[in-house]
Length: 363
Image (cartoon, rainbow, N blue to C red; front, side, top):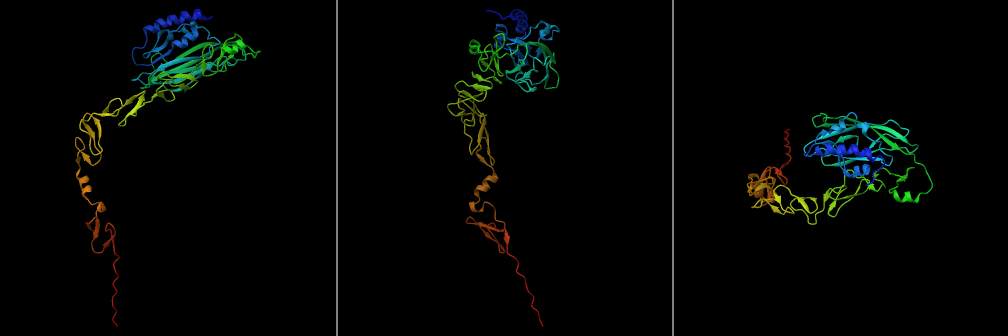
């Protein structure tokens, strides 16, 4: 394996970090932040995971005051760094990126985060990217800083944070030269060659030849990121991040398709398609099974299998169709209201106006 010019120094630092990280590898479900094997290999040529935070603890080498002095300058061909993080299923953390600042703005613009600078750490592993945009107008080394605050659900800082890292980035002048067929063949996705004949990638791409696209969140269930933010899903999955499944046979009884040919059943049902009820005696009168031999009855019914009709419901059913609403001033006869004297209308609720009596005048 051939190391890059900065590889020997980087190898010593990251090898030490890897030994510490291996001891501190997450065993539970708390907050973790790391650089994955693929990204580390892009930098050093060695596939290894480098953890900065593991199970809610900032690792010692990150807190070392001299840590920044040991770090090499980020080379010009590296235009971004990918980080993976998660809060765990039973934890909740909020984050805040701050002090995203370049100390040499004539060479390097301020760092840019691919996600919102404030928000909530995802429960499941997710990827975010830190872009380091060189201006390309001149070559040189630029300093920059990245600050990160992590607060738990009780408003307390994660031990070891806030973090403030000061790093350095090598930038190369982008000079428009004559056609370079060899370099043009190397750099994909509109990348370009710098003076050192190294590919500089467009935003959303990474790798030696700019062939690796970045999707956030990551494509799930075997999906492939084919362009920035676009996932191509494996057979049987769908959704923007391939998070949803496709069921060839429909889930029954209100079940929901959550993965390829896998249904999530409502309470009271089970089976590959939620086709089986946990109620050995079916629920009657529109009732729904919600547990082992437990029915949730519709209004007007009760009993273990919703087989008992409430008194009011019985009265409504016995009442003739034409007289469902009681006659106000009359009797229901033959599905019609027969009104008392002086009343009329379908429900006998309207009265006749009283006739005016006129007094006879005697002369």
